[in-house]
Image (cartoon, rainbow, N blue to C red):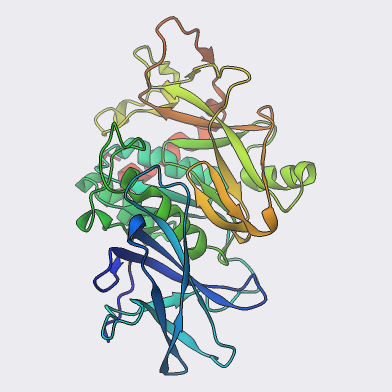
Length: 387
């Protein structure tokens, strides 16, 4: 049989696409959880063909479609296969259409077969998804901010980018800071460019962001102590300390260890009147915006819902969504972190009401002395600025 390591594998004649398969060690009986993208109205039935101790063992699978499909035809699903207690060495699995002989398209390696005694990473960030990306300066600034905050790994589900961005990704991949997962779902189904089906038509919500996030949670479940689920243009900044490494023990003391942490979104629009205190001449011809120039934030309206992103122990997660968790183990909640302790800075092109009084907030400048030389060093190493 064929073995295919990456996402996306079509399941036989069904409109089902398998992303990744992972052993889940959290319940009394071990199981394989496979993240997939499914046509919601198809009501398929699946089997799992597992390569166990060198022979194939077939079992029936159960599946559940995640509720956050935003009314698109396709949604994220978790397909679950029980692992027979006699199966000692499980290496590969194929999801097939039940009762259809010869419907094995290809096998996929099963990840998370063992639980390590220590985590290789303290903080990992899941970025989903990179498409048509060319803001090289923003990419490098984000990566170097992530590093300053304490991240040791950034996982990017990449559809496409320009050649300068690719140089930067290659640099970080070679240094072991970034893992690139090729995100090819748009070869199979029409992805939407937004989250509202009436405004951004397509068959799957926002480039397949939600299945990518869920795959990232399972992929790193036993590799990282904490997982941050946010976008490239979002930074979760603490106030009383400088790093996540110092922040998380403080949050666990305050809120408990079996919860996820929500960080309130704050919008910082790219401005027509930038603050040029940290304008760097040699960055000026690099594509993208210097985020140090935009330190005015749109005030959040009190007593209304504010979006957020999370940092969470991934072993608490069963189903993740764009903002927080759909389902967690033992019903573990996510708690909103007081915005005097930390908040999320979202830096991008925003429109906001013309008479808004923006609030100056230059907390990002507290990182400038470390950030500026780090960014210049990477841009030089990638041949994008002169030494």
